[in-house]
Length: 224
Image (cartoon, rainbow, N blue to C red):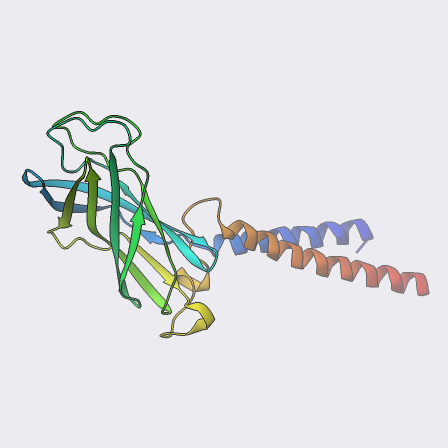
């Protein structure tokens, strides 16, 4: 095989290997779940149902977990001015791990009219695995603080987990299991994730091997 053809073949093999790595990294399993909240407010009990979307993105030795409310919950008999309401919540862990993950978010960016559903901003927190295996994340209690009062909203319908991740505890301790979903890949939740880095790494390794092969071939040719 001529030198130009050998170079093209090796480059194609490297690109194919990178594509295989990318395809082998599936997204973490996530579902939008309906949560039926019973809210204890300063003026009595209110109820509301909101679909909640949850995501998990690798961040250092842990994961950034985010809850997104699709509908508003509870309400206020008076207008809440900009920055008057601060939300926070807890996420209940299940599966290989246990406990809760606290999440919080910014105060309301705009005024909330009286007697209208309070739209909760995205709430985020960091989860650091203590056990190895599949871990589920289920919406827990929501806390709304506004104008010196506290409203506590508790799920009453035993919602299903909104997110499942395959994780590895620091040092690899804990129960048996992989560090990633389906086939040993890191959990991915979007296009800008480590799957791209893995694909690049795979391509780089093969390219380095190709360079070594070409160098040896050229060296043998010179000796002749």
